[in-house]
Length: 381
Ligand code: SF4
Ligand code: SF4
Image (cartoon, rainbow, N blue to C red):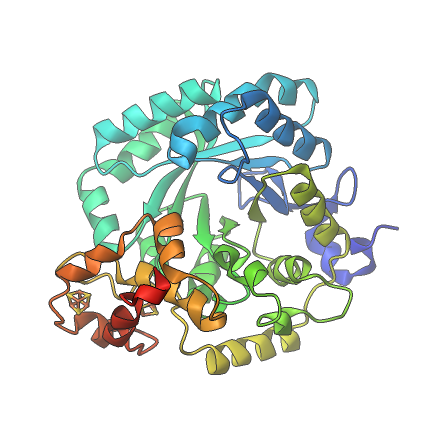
């Protein structure tokens, strides 16, 4: 008997092949592996063949959901997927490609889709996302421009099988959008260290029986980069920090899959090990994690996005999320994070007029302006 079968929780799972866990993706009838392939971390995306081997290895080991996007490595990630496609088909197993468009108008969405299909080497993508919705205003303006209707038209035309949304909004904002429009699935940043602040969005999607795909399951690298500081998410000594982050997510029955960005085959093995050793967290364990995060990590930015009201268009959340890394471990370099992860230059702070609106809006009541000053310090360059 497989490990997972030892738990009553397995009512929600079907075990296919190795010990991979599969879950229903909402109402689509598709069964998706609980670990998904994130296409944003290839070691060398210029080497199409070598990178494509990673996808084949993943499918061989039960991973059947492959997520990518046009801007991952400037289109090269999609090319890797397209290059892997013939070999993936040979395996004779079900697998699914997911991609996205953040087009703000109909023409851009169509152009994005055409380019994606060409790079992916297919006529129809399985999951097509309204990508990177940052705020209710962002969503409203795309909707007013006809973008959301266009996505549904694309499905009617048979160019995408399922229409989904990918967002960085906070829980209540997600709930509002999902009330307004119908999607078959949602991709959202969620992890053991930010869940109290996005949980309502997950619940809203679950109430609509949508597929729920988790991006940044390792807290954008924060959990793995600071294993001591986040050791409290582990429930036993055998768990690695990666196991713990994945086990926490899989314990939520409504989560379909957690996307992990793989650079090497060992990373795939690591994620598979986490599935093999999965033992669901109890509701008491989750409740105590939540309490700890809400009390001890109050000074962390949760990337909830409420500060996206800056009259100067300064990406406050990017600065504060980068600052998190220095708070957790003083040897971390927040400005490196700012540039590498968010593509933001610290000089953007020069445009700040110190109006204080971001501090007023901040759900964590963070001293944002004080942190701006610290971020300008030479020692963090
Ligand atoms: S204080 Fe600066 S960063 Fe904050 S909202 Fe005002 S201009 Fe934007
Ligand atoms: S700075 Fe505050 S409001 Fe902005 S994303 Fe972080 S926690 Fe949310």
